[in-house]
Image 1: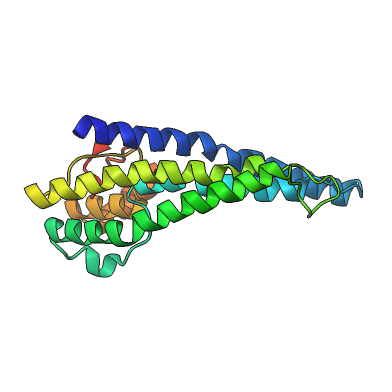
Image 2: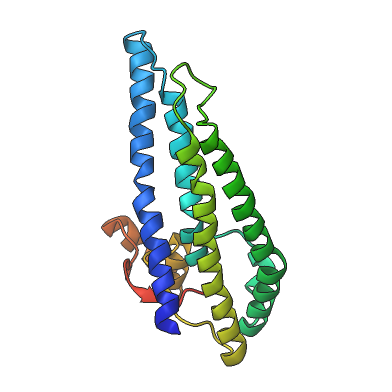
Amino acid sequence: MQRLLLGIDRLSTFVGQVFAWSIIVLTFVVVYEVFARYAFRAPTTWAYDASYMLYGTLFMMAGAYALARNGHVRGDFLYRNFRPSLQAKFDLVLYILFFFPAIFAFMISGWTFAAQSYAQHERSMFSPSGPVIWPFKFLIPVVGVLLLIQGFAEVMRCIQCIRTGAWPQRLSDVEELDQQILAAAAEKDPEELAREMARTGHIPGERAGDEHTGR
């Protein structure tokens, strides 16, 4: 089961990391548009459509990746004080009552939305070039499927935690900076830590690209 859960994490991570490159393309589009507009007095007819599609793609395709990293917003000021089994029970109830119904509705309405756009060969109304936008809209049901798969993995983790009292291992390629600093501060004097960070430019013991318990 653990291999399956980590495999789902890897799928969400792969998709999120691949589409993260959209930010590079988006940056190029915005810079080019500004340069062409103010340097050559020749604004493009496609930059606006390209920018909102790229941003929307980045935002949507990162959803399952953020869920795999346990990165979505929650009321941590209460949640972090619960024991793991109680955290898992809260998560399980919320997944069943809110997450899965919302994802199913998202997938169904997204598919209808995209299919209508394809049938009409819909084009953007926001610029003279009017690019087709149905491929962009078909990302909605795709994102729904990815979130559904990752949600299944999270539910399995909740069930395991309720049974064992501890969160199972989670795939992770980054750690939050504040967590690294707090962990390092717990091991050495804060003033010494600050001096070492100022001298080396990084946090002592900083890691990336490993697997660890993510809760």
